[in-house]
Length: 352
Image (tube, rainbow, N blue to C red; front, side):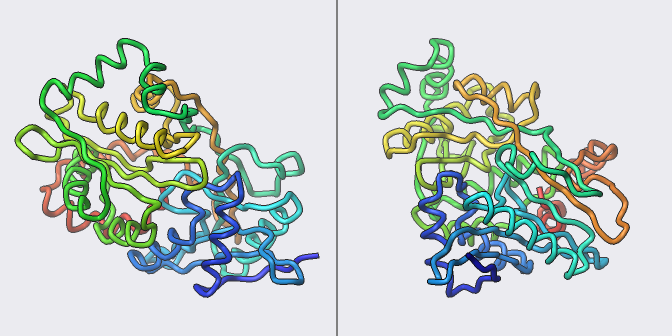
């Protein structure tokens, strides 16, 4: 027997202790994600926990409510990342999902989205009405050897040459913490503007690094003149390491700073005992997919479950808008300072 309840910050230690031992957990399941979202964007959380009669944690389901300025609300597990969803035994996960659907209806949300890292067990049963599964995206995963020297030996000659290229050009990589945030954010902001995407608030990354502590690393690649030209953030859980964000300055792409950045992340992960490296979300066949594939990674389809309520039109919470490319083109043409100011104000409402 078990019961379900919403958590408070007093439950953080119990929550994280469960996440640390669950092999299905991802780095976004840490309670730190909730705290960072709350502090940076002020969204309401609905973090569900299953407990037995002794108060032991048997399962968790993290949910964040995103309320649009015009009043519509959606519950997501979880926003700003590739996946989350419930953890625990089958019956516990099923009960957590049922509770989440109830909460979404109670909160008068127009929908709920649960992002599973792979096909969930409950999909073997009947799919609820007004729901669908989006499987258009994949995670790119690579198993890691015990040492960085073994990792290097597994790379093809062409890949090793690509990694050496930025080194020959005098580029240097650096791995650290929040002291590198300004360098990362400068590169990230410039790249998001070029891509036509509203940028995350700097406070988002600041709070993320503060809450994650030693479970987060910032990687920077510098030109020989000291200017940061590529950067990324690495998050860890259990035996897994993941890169949710990485960017480089386009004008330096001919000397491949991203190759040096990812090699540093991979080598560090291997040397520090992580068994699996997650390159993050990609669309099969597109440029980022091919970039990640060359490192020896394989695709794992993401399963994003979506259900809508209260007569909401099935507009596709996660589907690509037909006008997105046009909007991106317009956004990239905005003056950089204006885009930097407006971006975070919009980004908090974009769950991807």
